[in-house]
Length: 585
Image 1 (cartoon, rainbow, N blue to C red):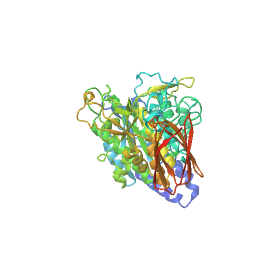
Image 2 (cartoon, one colour):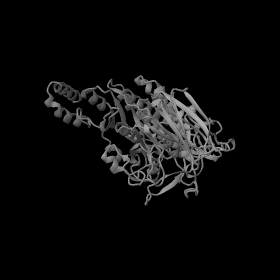
Image 3 (cartoon, rainbow, N blue to C red):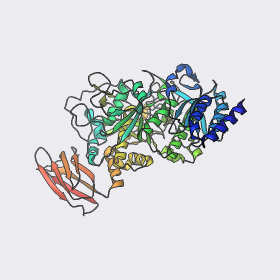
Image 4 (cartoon, rainbow, N blue to C red):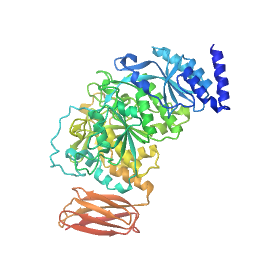
């Protein structure tokens, strides 16, 4: 019977290439035999809502896999007979499809790891199959600690000072956001993806900024405090006279609610894979994931079973390689995680998803993509706290290790929530640090849209483009001594934007120090007017300033409450212009 059906499918498939009228018939037959049409194939993810905890076979309290579900990456050019034979070899029927990636999700009977591997091997024997696997599931949560006490600094007494960040805006000061915004006239449109718990669409800071790739994803969105807070950090509106400004306020947000229901804990790889695919298809270059699995590591254990993490890494790295092969570019930014179940930092490898991919477990090479091309499109972010006096330290619970690329402000971060009346609150965790880096990467891509994802990462993570360093947790607070503890650069939005400007424009570096008549350092506003564009910068309390200008003839005004001084800058001068000490009346 199987042979007869295969022959019939082959004959009809060949006829369809000569008789276009048979296309609908072929789609009908394909749907009947494999679960999806052949010619009118499109992304379908309805099956995700049908997966519950009952479908997860637990390997331990925090690790498992989805029973009866296989993932199959097929060649772009494959025939219906090839698809039918591959699916039939495991008794499988397609229940979902993802484009980009040409990923088919099959329902096939198995309930043990051993049985799953047998079916995977059968699938990979087919010449039309590139890669196959099961879908592991982990307990995941947002990487934040909502118990941190609030501080009392939203009363207007806080002032901006990039030379000594403090108060409710310390995180923006520490990354020199104000002077990054000074280059706003060079910014292009940019989209940042967020895969998180749900989003409050009507918050005064976010209304009109959030979109969903599909209407059913919007309908699935259940507003939550965490997702709304992350969205605010990235793109809360600027100059609306209320609340906060996001680090990339001009960015548009492409959002995916990864939780099927409030408080969901178990999450299968499929939810993340489909979320990433939808985000990229909708035009997002940078994708933020403030979530992970390390907080479910039981006390007394230093990590998850390595085979499970390696399996996840292989699947996701192969997926990234397919996207790269298809011409998509992107940058995945994930939080490093907030330690184990007791908040003790572990290797960030155990936070899963993109954090667990390394040179040894990546499968990108199977498609001819160098492993470095995948790793260079992943940024793992640790959380830093402010010790005052321009000193920063990695928060005691922030995961560590070679996986972590950079730190960002992550403790006591003030942003939007989903509560009524357009509320705001402080949250802490690597969940808050990751969107600071995502927004910075968005700014870089906004200035220089032709950069590759790997180039954006290189700019954002280059210590030469940062100002501050976050010291590691003190020795007395280290629980797992065999981990890698080291200084990490603290992301700097101004430095990253300026590095991006240099990739686009023949530029001029300007720096100096503003002082009063008695040569005391003086904070001041700086306006730079060229023939086409105007930029606005600030000198902090130490009086120091620096900026990068596209070559032009500029007039520069230094303004304080006491007076104004103007300098004409001729762009025919040296590449670096030192204005020395600018004395203001």
